[in-house]
Structures are given as C-alpha cells and as structure tokens.
Length: 115
Length: 112
Image (cartoon, rainbow over all chains, first blue to last red; front, side):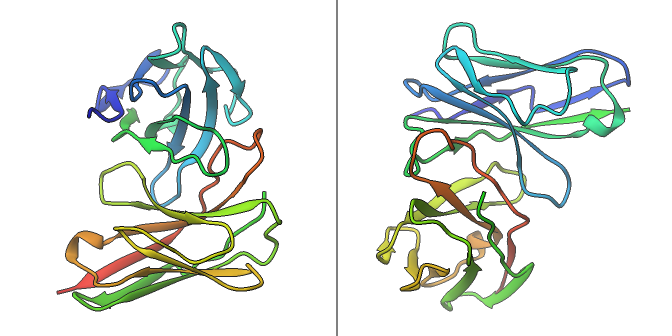
C-alpha cells in the first residue's frame, strides 16, 4: 500500500517568505507527527495530532510555526517569515497507535532551504 | 525522557554479523526499547522494539540485558543496504508520551 507522502520534496525560499509543507499520511492512521532534522542530527519532534486536534505542540520552536489537520487526514505545516535557521529536512510520520508499542511510519521528508 | 547512549559510528564487513550497543541506565519500568534506522536521504524506518525479552523479526534481533540498562541490536548478516544511522529510543508504554525522542544515533558503515 501507499506510504506517507510529502510535498514538495524540495523547497527553496527567500528569507521572510511564507511556506507550506504538506503531508499525506497512511490511510486509516489517526496519529500524525511532524519532526525537523538538521544536518548531522537526529529528527526533532515538532507537533503531534490525534485526529484533527493537536495533542502536543510542545516542539514548535516559536509562533512562526503552525500546523493544521482539518479533516483528520492531510496535514500542512506552515512557516511564516522564514529565517535561514529554519533550513532543514521536515519529516512527517503517521501511526495507527500512539502507545509505546506503536510503530511510526515516516515519509521521505521535505528539504527546506531558506536563502 | 530517559536517555540513551550509543557509539557515534561503527564499521562492519559485508555478510558479517553486526552488534549495535545502546546504554539506557535510567530506563523506567514502562519504557519500551525501540530501534529505528535512517538510510541516506530517507525518513527513519522502524526496525524492532522490545520490553524485557529478546525479540526477533525479519530485519533484526534485539537482545535486552536482564537489568534492562542496555540492549543490543543484532543484524545477523549485514549487507550494503544496511548502511544507515541506527537510533535507539525509549518510549513509555503509557499514552501521553507519543513522540519519538531521537539522539544522534550510530552511523553504521558496511565494508564490501
């Protein structure tokens, strides 16, 4: 079956611009996660959705970052007034279960470059 | 979150077994031990998880110390495709701790 997909695969934007990154989770997965990965580091948690609501947004670095999942499926990560420090690979994952045994399935990521 | 410690890098010859260690001395009784790996230019992928007993699946085996303060991921016969960064992650069984907390992992290089 289809895995988690993310679009675009690459995004180059100028400092100060607004960007949207899209994630299509695996069908039927109620939990959706966003992570950010800088070069040489492991992925860093940003936000987690259970259904339509953000259950944990403690990883969002500041109020320029916002994410939505209006129908409990596709999610969009929105970044306002982008800064060069926002350059990273943004990863999306989904899972059927959120318990300690639940496997997360990751997409290939969106590489964001802010110039 | 309880922390894990892994070597930064390891090398192994192709077709040889690989033992990837992880220390988690502050593990709690409800923490599962998860392993994920990340191939170049891809998102992480689940490998295996366990609680107390050793576990086997088609990808690997997980050996857990009796005191649960360390574990070892075993790749029985490494191939070039196993070259990746391997992450050892603790994850609480209880709901409310859904995120994965990644460290820097172990970069495994396979020598042909």
